[in-house]
Amino acid sequence: MKKLRLIAFLFSSLFLLTLVSCKDDAKDTEPTKQDLLTSGEWTGAKIYMSGKDVTQLYKTEQNYDMSKNILKFEKAGTYTDSYERSTISGKWEFSKDEQYIIHDKGTADESSFRIKALSAKQLIMTQEFSNQGYTSTFELEYKR
Image (tube, rainbow, N blue to C red; front, side):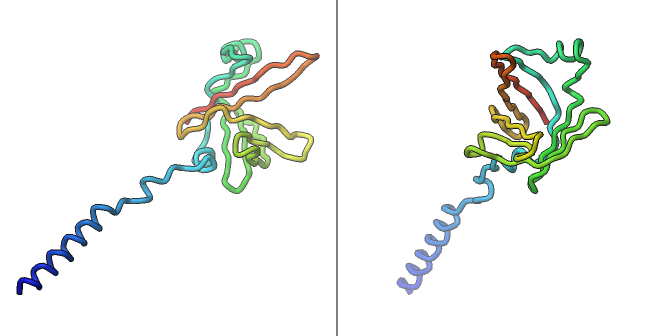
């Protein structure tokens, strides 16, 4: 009888230990960059030129309201970039260990953006451009 109690106690202890040591793996999984990028629409927030916030300048002088820019990436590798009633569509992909997003690779419209920040609520992309020997960094900030 004593042996039976001991075996029951050992099995109970082992069962409890197993329950306590198990954890929910789904909660520990962090979203991938693709998951973050494609989980919804991105609304334009700010424009920076060489580190300076030029959002208001673009709005008053260029009549370009960044908050009307909506960007959407699909897991299938397509994107849409909308501003008011105008929409541009194309294909996108990651490059350089998911540090860059390339739009329309291999076409005349190809462009590359470096991902400066990407989270569930914020996307910041930068692009360098040169004009007459002067290089500048253009930064676009989007929010959800």
